[in-house]
Structure formats: structure tokens, C-alpha cells
Image (cartoon, rainbow, N blue to C red; front, side, top):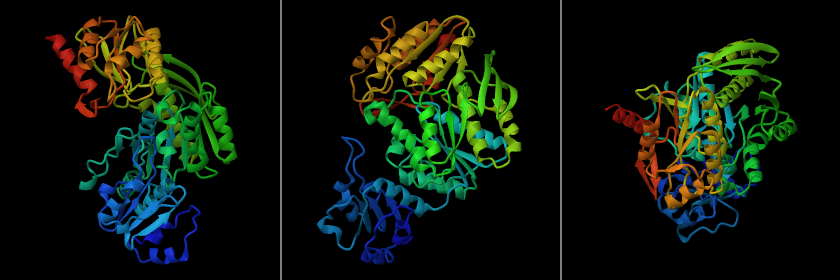
Length: 505
């Protein structure tokens, strides 16, 4: 593709006539923000560091040129190295946003319907539930986020088979490449997780999003954003800048931020669909726990429904309603709203989210959940309590090199809501695991401390009586334990099954 065709996005940018003329003759074979991935004919985006210790792309321009770059995208005032030759420099005051827009132009194709959801907790379940609802309605759908790309109907090209990301929202180039592959594969409906990092770093810019949704905002990522205000502003960008004016927004009415977000949406002329106990559009009238799920009485746009919801936990209902709201917002035929509501009775759980792994020989259930924030842990423990006849036991830890302030908070929540607490390790990274455990212990002084996560799981299972419930929280779907800078294979579900088998012997 010609460089000029990638450059001419919807962002105003003054392009000197000489540069514009040269850009017509430069053919771009690919684009990347990683100088190591540059090949002959590529454009290299020399992006500024996103964190205080992040890499500054301007330091790698010479390497990119040596690898064959024909164009460089960078901030104004960038000095090209002596080996630049005829390599074209493109300057932009916001190179991150420009790069996302250029990646969208380069890859081109996108599913005709795209929804994006942001929030501290619930994003993965929401996009998975939306995908399930679309599938029930007969749409070719996919989801993209923390658990990678889910589109089983597509046979991925060899080069894409291992494309997955440790990021909730992939980098701009990967995101737009994956989205284009989904469109080429016949996907018409896509639900995307929008992380605060991804929004703050403009990774989602260029996506043709028709609906944006908000689940909640609780303490997380303070090591990156620095304050809850900055964290909220990053989330709000989805509604004020990424979502085109006059689109549709789905908002959790039960959050403290709902009023502010709805005001921002009105300023953008968005149509708002709210959900929750305080909502007008999708209002929960009552919620009653059952043995394997919940009975939900719901008022949806004035119509009352009585549903057998098949999953436990109030937060699962909230995520499902968020998903239903997104699907409704994309539906032109309102007569299908009833089908969407009824689809809620057919939802299946998401891997690693309030997932029942197995029961012990005496019948005690063991769950895993990705809960790694104070709010996430509180929601899952509260969700399990109505289904726990006797003791609720939890094992969890906190990640290293991350927000230290949430550690005693999570400890306090665990001690308040569980009957037995086991503190263990959860991705200590380069921090001293003992210090992390001690900081959690400040919030739950009565807890048992077992650093080895495998032994902590075995201990929890050994304590179980027939009427107890055991939750292993923090990792969910993850399959590794990060110690120092090495990822060691570790899967909570696998270790639980091993421990139960061992217990049986």
C-alpha cells in the first residue's frame, strides 16, 4: 500500500506538499512499533515511552532503518540518524493515535458490527456473553481480549495461529491485524475488551465501534495511572473520543460513575441503555439464588420477564445484562429484544470466571476465578456465599511490581467474607514474595500463609468438609506463575484436579 494512502486518516495533520508527493511513491509492506520486527519496506512507529521505565521508540530508529524501514513515524522535532538516507520521516504530535489510525487503514477490513466494553471487572465475561448471544441469534461472531481471540469458525493463517497477547487490549498493529483477519473470515459481529492501558495508549483508535459499554470502576492499575481520576479519564475516553458522536452506550446504573458517564455520553449525543437495580432500560427487579443458578425477575424496556439464569453470582447477572444491552444496541429490529433476553437462560460460564473445576470425593465444590482486585474478590466471595451451606474457604495472593495499596484491602475483604483464608503467591515477579504476603496479612491477621501456591491449594482441599466451598482466586484462566522474570507453567485448575486425585488416593 502507498504510504500516502495510510497517512491520510481522519485526523487533521498538515502534510508538507513535498512529503505528500514523496509519500505517493513509497510502498509500505508492513508496519510495526517494534524495531526488531521491521523488515524491508516497513514503516516503523517510534512511539514515546508509555511509562517511566518504558522503552522510547526514538532510540531504535537507526536499528529500524538498518532492518529496512522506508518510513518513520515519530513526534515533532525527531532527529533522523546518519543512516536515514531517503527514509521518510512523518511527524505527529500524537504518534500513538496516528499509528493506530494508520494500522486501521493498512489492514482495512473490519466486521460490520463492533462493540467495546471497558471497566475494572467483568470485561471478559461481558464480551464472551455477547458472543454467545449473537451465536444464539444466528450471527457469525467473535470476542477479543484477555483470553485472546475467540472465533472457532475461522481457520487462522499459519502466521496467526499463535497470535495471542498477554495484554487485555493488544498493541495497535496486532489488534487491527486480528480484526481484519476476523472480517476476512466472515465474522460480522465482534465484542472487544477495552482496557484502560489500551485506551490511554490509543490502541483502539481506528476501530469502527458502534457501541461502547461500561461495567464498573474500582481500584486497580494505580501503579500506571497514579490516581482514580486518571483511571476514570482513561476509561471515559472510550465514550468521548473513540466512539463516534451519536452512537450508543451501555452503562452500569449501579456505579458511582454512572451519572458522570451518562452526562459525557449526552454531550456526545449518544443514546444510553442502562442496566442494574437502579436502571431504567434493563432493571433488575429481584434476584434469588438457586442450587445451580439464580431466578431473575427483569424489566426490559417496560416488559417484565421471569428467567432461570444458569450461573451463580450477582456479578454474572450484571455482566450478562451488559452483554444483552450491547446486543440490543446493535439490533435494528426491536422485536428481537425478547429473543435476546431469553438467550440469557442459555449462557454458559467463562473459563476462569466463577468456574466450578471439580468436587472433592465428599462433594465439596472447588472454584477458580480471575479476581485479582479488591472489588473482584469481594464480588466473587459474595456470589459464592448463598451457595455455601457451611464454610467458605479462599486462597489468593497479589501480584508483584503492581499496586501495593490494594494488598491489605484484599486481605480485609477475604477475612470479612470468608471463613478461612490462605495467603499464597500470585505472580510475585521481581518483588520479594514474603513482603507481598506480609502486606496482605496486614488486612487479615488470622490467615494461614503458604507461599507455594501448589501447597496452598492442597491445604485448602484437605480442609474441605462436604458442606464447604473452596475458592482459588487471582489467576483464573492463566497458565503461568511469574517469578522474577521467568514464567513457570502453572494452572490452578490442573493443580486442583491433581490435589483432589491425591486426596482420593
